[in-house]
Image (cartoon, rainbow, N blue to C red; front, side, top):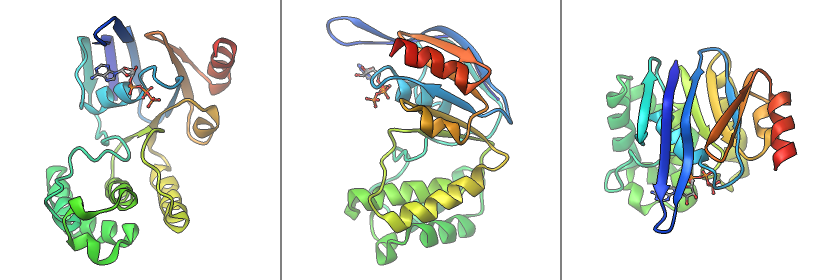
Length: 217
Ligand SMILES: Nc1ncnc2c1ncn2[C@@H]1O[C@H](COP(=O)(O)OP(=O)(O)OP(=O)(O)O)[C@@H](O)[C@H]1O
């Protein structure tokens, strides 16, 4: 479970305070995937990062009691000086997983051949995206965090392969997706929210959330 209790977050832009969340309280329950609709620039990435524990709230508390993924596509934990192999094995150990399995799965899925044994700093943008995507899919979590703004790859075959595995991985799992497009949420979400002007409005169905989102967009 992820629980936000009276969480506030804002940034000072040098001119004004940009409010991302204002005393928001909600829960992500296991088995009830959540889709959050939010226009660009309203704080999708910040919200997902707070769920992942990568950013702290200014006020309030965030409680996590499940195995929660890092955001899909996140590269912050990857060391550029180390190879794909070294990073995969190190991250597997951090999460208490089998390094042999994580390395083998990641190597197979990302398909970057000999580059897997070269420093991540030598990878192209697309290779980096494939690597981080594969790394996440190699791991089992209870709740998967997906920011639609994740780097996507232009490799059609990889996208197809990774998309199939992502769907398999997500069966029976809980997903949180933040997006500015409702189509992306339709496949996964049981409950939905709309983030706007620092307020998070929660609904029991995506239909209801869409009505508010489309009305106020
Ligand atoms: N460290 C920071 N300092 C100041 N402003 C920030 C900081 N991080 C984010 N912001 C601002 O907060 C707002 C929300 O940022 P965030 O990246 O979470 O939004 P987003 O909805 O994911 O955006 P996009 O859809 O464009 O990717 C933006 O206006 C951004 O410029």
